[in-house]
Length: 250
Image (tube, rainbow, N blue to C red; front, top):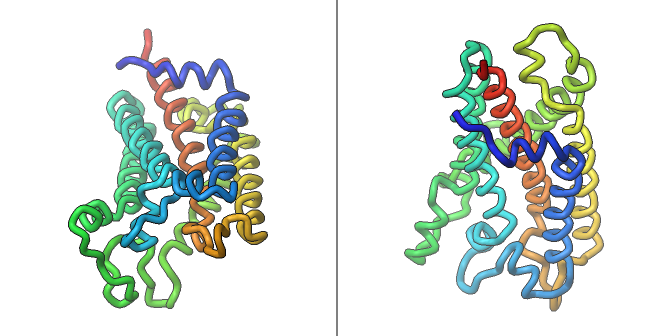
């Protein structure tokens, strides 16, 4: 199986891949959204006429880029699964496949917002009839499922992309050493947190307001954090695939 040029570039240019590139992408989108210019804001998260906000924003650059990252995460997770010979690496790759495909389907509401947009018929937002996805559904506890997902994601990022690179990078076990990400991912995690705070700070300060109207992401500023989280996972999946390929070479 062939290696990826982008993965090789990541390994050869770790600072540019883990800091510069995600920084440029996020700051560009944040700058456009909070620019005070309606045209630029609508590129990031459009407010389409006669289209509900929960559907309208799905067609912006921010959400579309998330979907793009998730498609490639799924693609390279499958490639890792097919290429891996080690049972534990294969099982872990299979977990990445399930996780990435499920997340992608949840992000696109299983195609619902595309169908609604082209038919012009939009479903109800009532919690008791919500069936667009699982993560926005209200659990029996009265809390949205997405709250539990965010907690799980924070724990996974803290342990897998901060603690593991710090304490397991030089572990003797070859399988764990292959799975543990580079310490450069810690820089991406820090950047993700800083950019998320920047976006929330700008929103709290009212910079998304244009002509007295809040930006369409007013209650969904966490979308900027999600973008960087998916980019982080994409970096990891690409590098993992490259490691698996190199390991199989004679």
